[in-house]
Amino acid sequence: MFNRNETTMLLARINSYACWCCLTLLGSLGCGGDFPKQRSTETDIDLSAQSIVSGQSFAEARSGFQTRIVRQIRADYPTPPPPPELFELVKYNSPAGALDAYVSPDPGDGAKHPAIVWIFGGFDNSINETAWEDAPPENDQSARAFREAGLIMLYPSFRGGNQNPGTIESFSGEVDDVLAAAEYLSRLKYVDPNRIYLGGHSTGGTLALLVAALSDRFRAVFSFGPVGNIVGYGVEEYGFDINSRPEFEFRDPIWWLNSIETPTLVIEGEGGNVDSLREMAQSTQNPKLHFFPVQGVDHFSILSPVTRLLAEKVIQDTGTEPAIVVTEQELNAAVRQR
Image (cartoon, rainbow, N blue to C red; front, side):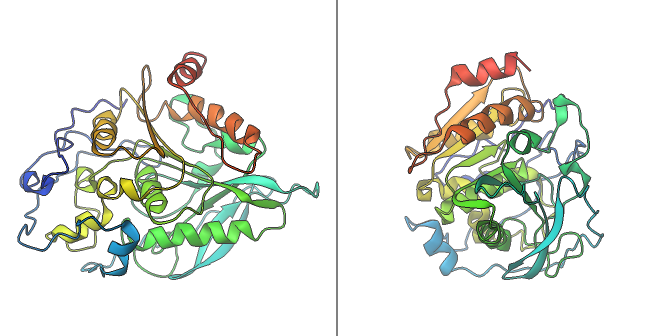
């Protein structure tokens, strides 16, 4: 199971990138159900480059920065067809083009339902059978608790994933894809456009934080096991210029947490990527952000019990303003009952 001795997440907000050269990460975050091999984080970042972190918002930083993709990466495998009683395979329009997604079918009851966009972990921007296949509660990344509670679910793939147009940009253009997926979801006749939530796990949790920093489109955001600095994932998966300080800053949630205006829960098991959670918690006093390290679970086993708790909270969240409140005691109780 997930047992990491993470050495790269000692970075603070004061010139943290100076610590990146020749570090070794022991372990990495999981994706797609399998724990990946150890990844190297060795790279020589050009610290002479002008930082883009200068008190501006994430939206302002994005408007003034153009990522440089130096290696074209695509998943290039078909999107598996889902069970029709659970999901439809659809396309939503993003700036990259028409992208695949799984979405819950119309319940046919004439009601408008709350909905959630769920982002899988992993680096290939793709969707697959994880959305519906049975999995043990110790590692169920489907977030099926939301569907079982009555939410409409949408699992988006992103640019360069599956056989989508575009190339994988790793936490850059994918932010725009998530917002485009939410727009598609909001237009479905059986979805309440004012009750759309966002959740993600691992790299999906990291991406969810960046989306929250850019837009208040979602009613609440649930980020499981993200990192503050994406160098912690290693650099082998990235197609952008890995020697560029601004390229990493542009993708690191820790620099943009103060831009978040949506109620956001950041949650991780004590046996998982909890050092990064604590680092981010220490870096911001944004009242919209709530950080929860949870005892007795790890990076994967936290998902099943806590998504059940959150699904119950979402169903009860029916007021004009979001009212998702979670306590440490509730989280610990949910884990004990799993």
